[in-house]
Length: 53
Image (cartoon, rainbow, N blue to C red; front, side, top):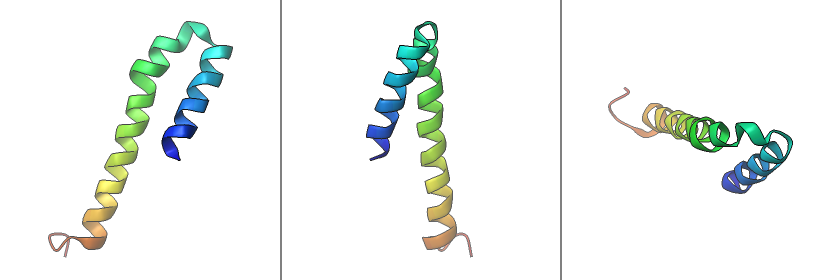
């Protein structure tokens, strides 16, 4: 679901702002994805890991 939303947003933004396509596709969206993965990783450590206790 998240990937479909990412692709749809990228299409809309690249249509409206074609000059920023390389930035959006190459920098911004990878940062969003890695940030989301990092937040999930921190949540998993705090919730399910024995190391956090």
